[in-house]
Amino acid sequence: MDPWIWAVCLIILGLGLAVLEVFFPTEGILGFLAACAVLGGILLGYRQSAAVGTIMLLLSIAGLPTAVVVALKYWPQTAVGRRVLLTAPTREQVMPANPERDRLRAMIGQVGEAKCHMLPAGAIVLEGRTIDAVSEGMPVDAGQRVRIVQVRGNRVVVRPVDEEAPTPEAPNPMERPIDDPFS
Image 1 (spheres, one colour):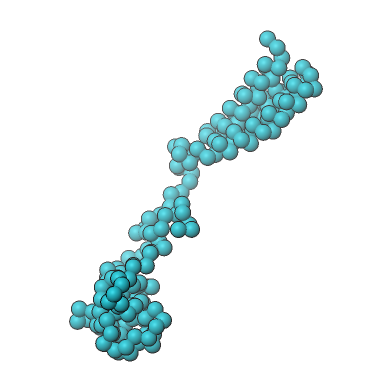
Image 2 (spheres, one colour):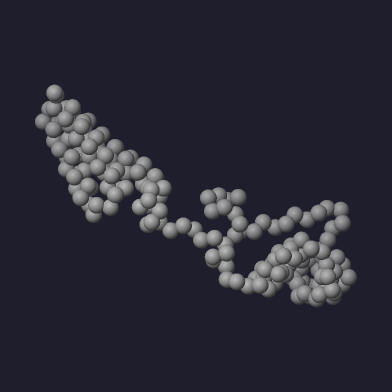
């Protein structure tokens, strides 16, 4: 068998050991063996000829980082990766329990009536209850119908109801998927 075939086999063995080092926690043992195999493959290539040695060197320089990056891409799906990496918490785990805020959020989309002139803060009447609210920046006359569009903390944000066009509900940024931050 030609020595350059042994050089290629050692390079492939070194790349495989480097990938295994990513998946199995061996405290650097497989990494050391991978480095030895790659260096042995390069030296065997240079023993054959300068051209074969240079090809082995370039193959190692391009192949090793590529193999490790591809292995790291799939690492979170492995058993070790799932143990090491944390999962994103759900909204229920992050937000503290606040029944008042949950009650106010349930009112989003409902229509009430301004109790007083709102510039921009005031009170609205919804189902016989008076609620402190803030308009979206526009003045609201007393007795004008308003729709609850958002709850910021314990503050209710309202918008005057336009009888011709329905108002879309504002998207909740906490419900947007984390993979698509620009939507």
